[in-house]
Image (cartoon, rainbow, N blue to C red):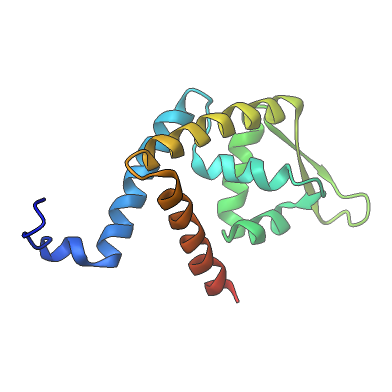
Length: 147
């Protein structure tokens, strides 16, 4: 676009830009993760479960901001692929603890590598400083909403 041209009406709207940027990043990430047998939602579950503390399905769902039924479906799929296992909590038999298997840890490592590469491709049109500023600004907006 030449300097003397105005952006199209939609291209000046933050919501439009965020929506389309997120859709492009989601496509790029999905393509990168496909060969690892997980999608972005499943990868997020693996990341949360890898944090080091034992979590129940309900606790993991709360960390991800998803409802319990969605979490059950995600865990079922990951369990079917041998990436996680469920067991009863020794402290509270009503709870199911979910843990990564060794295959899940391997998948997480490889999928995270692919995700980082996808993010680099997505951010490639920006110089390094601008890309880092974008990530910081978005983090601030997301974390402020949680307060």
